[in-house]
Image (cartoon, rainbow over all chains, first blue to last red; front, side, top):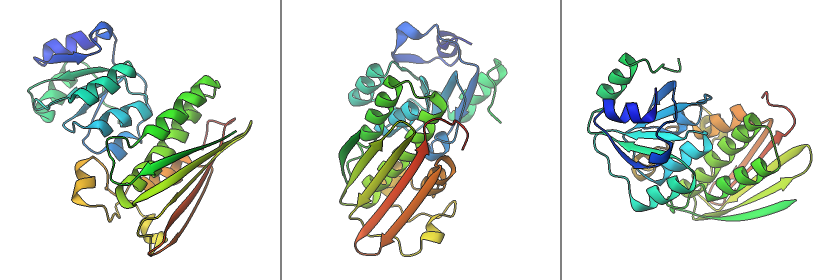
Length: 114
Length: 141
């Protein structure tokens, strides 16, 4: 599923990395716990999280995750956006809860890791 | 090659900078991506631990053709019971650290799971030292 399709399905907004919105993701992982994210080994992964701070971006960097979906209208700070742009990431925000966003994406064919 | 980074306790804005620099360097050197991920997961968890628990700390990286050795020393409160600290789920992290997405007692177990060699020594009231070694030429743990 392309990132732009994900954004559209969740009534989301692309915060940065819109030029890479044609990227395909096949799997998603939803967590607010960054140590959990660091255990994940998968390419083409979308991180779904309600945790919006610099460590979310850093954790994604360490985990080779290029796309993050922030749920519940979480704000992306200018520092987060700058770092994400430097790293070539796409950040999306959406108003849905993590449960609802995960459910919609699962129904659309995005696969879980386990 | 040897590199050194200073880490400031409590500075979550810059936590991960050293790990990011090491990741870039290993990519430039053409190290296997699976190995790079194991290195940076270890280093990032350890770097965040310094930020979360210590006043400050030093990361030194010793890189040769076969291995990367990461030494991290801090002047934090130290760990009284290392065996207990190594158990999944055990944590003494503050609520502020938990708000940053850490402090669930997974850091040291994550390091142990990804390292080829992992040594931890600590003296309560003085600080903690980690030595993490990863072979650069084998992807498997």
